Image (cartoon, rainbow, N blue to C red; front, top):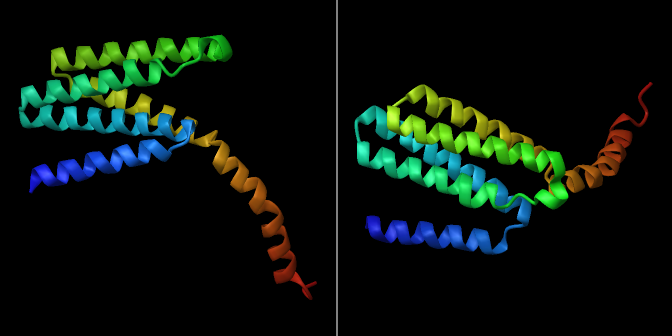
Length: 150
């Protein structure tokens, strides 16, 4: 049963990746890294050293091979360079957290990744377009609701 659920989950993720926008793909990388760090901490607290190491390695791979490689340093300028340095710091902290069995370091990384994810979601082009398209409809609805009021 577990094998079937894992296969279903993998297929579901693959389908989501196939139809995701580039912006959504980066969001998915953040989500995966955040989940892997959370699992590393859970395994640390449970004393599951091998699983902690595997989860930490997964988080590092997502940061290094996903987030860092997705940076366009020619177009991104200083922002891309700063993000690259931050991702390098995150990977280093994850490695140290794993080696030292340091829950606080996992928490720090979790906070950094969560903040980056929130910032990334705030600049989602699709969400911005929806807000722009919603504004005239909301203004029209407000006008209808306020009709006849002083």
